[in-house]
Length: 450
Ligand code: UDX
Image 1 (tube, rainbow, N blue to C red):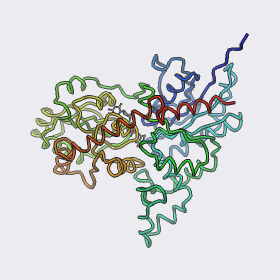
Image 2 (tube, rainbow, N blue to C red):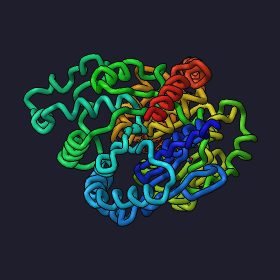
Image 3 (cartoon, rainbow, N blue to C red):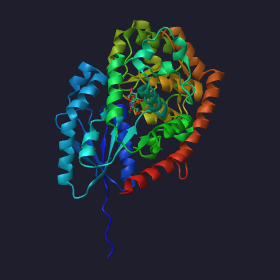
Image 4 (cartoon, rainbow, N blue to C red):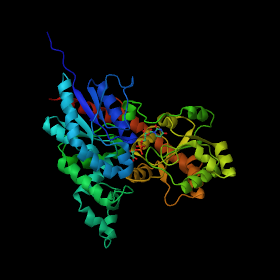
């Protein structure tokens, strides 16, 4: 009798933040649909709970992982450094336990590059490991270039601004100045983390949540540079929907959208980490009101944590905001972007938001805050030409102008046409025979090989 083939187990190790957990759960779902058993190894916060959306998934807690208060105290980079130092032994114990409990072996550990301490367990138990980049290929490439640069010297070299303005070879429009990590604290902890990541790396392949039709140049560059298999299989939210919102999504906004005219609404969300200063919020509210367009505004989990802050606006502004706007703490974003009433997305340009907007053909106003959001904004504006950047200080006139350019003017209509074409290409890439579809199949073959 033919022996039934044992299913292989994959352990996923995401960074505990919305923008990372979401694509990890999508990848888990995609691999589970291909017949793998999935274990999600999580820390103490921003956790996904078992649910019918993840049938058969196993969730384990990494003992002694750092609490959320440490993230708030240290900021994301110092937190990641400390987390990895603390986590190494703890993650090894976790894997040892899993190996004892499971009848089947662990075929692979797939981890977020910032969780590099996993590699120690992979080495000790001789388990292959693969890095999953939840941000863009261009961001991954830029970090590779940064690792090779004598960055401390390079970025302090004010004598030579020309060198910083040079385009990185084969990565146009990426310039050296874009490599400098932006807005996430001093340079040195970033460089320390890059050293740790590169020195400890034993991963045998890379998965990237992107599509060849979006970043072919950066992907070719990475393939040459890394000399390991690279699987660009995104956008994963199309391939495998995996509800993994850490905040409750307020669906009342869909009813409000149902009452608005087609392509009239500007949707504003800054994701889960960025937050706007008070002055910026007030100027934005004035600009939105002056634009005369309806708007749906997500306040998120930043400093403005609820719709109540509208109470602090002057009377006149409060009146127009409540007439034209709808404010929620957290929305069902993918559904919002797919709604026919939405004509534009004002975004911080997190990679998930960028992919979700592209996949629905919605043009964008880009207001990046930190990190790779700046690269994403550059791509949205200058490479794909499906958005405009709002640079400098936010003032009500610039907000009003940007909204009109996107929603009312001919310029916006052209951007929407280009966005629709890009959407078609992206959707084709995840369909049977498309590049992302094939990349997922190739990854499955790779993971199935002993
Ligand atoms: C973080 C970083 O800030 C970002 O730069 C990086 O690319 C990923 O990690 P975040 O700021 O949360 O992510 O932004 P983003 O990547 O856009 O992810 C936000 C996710 O939250 C999206 O999947 C979006 O659909 C979801 N979301 C957002 C909601 O479900 N509801 C909302 O109201 C807003």
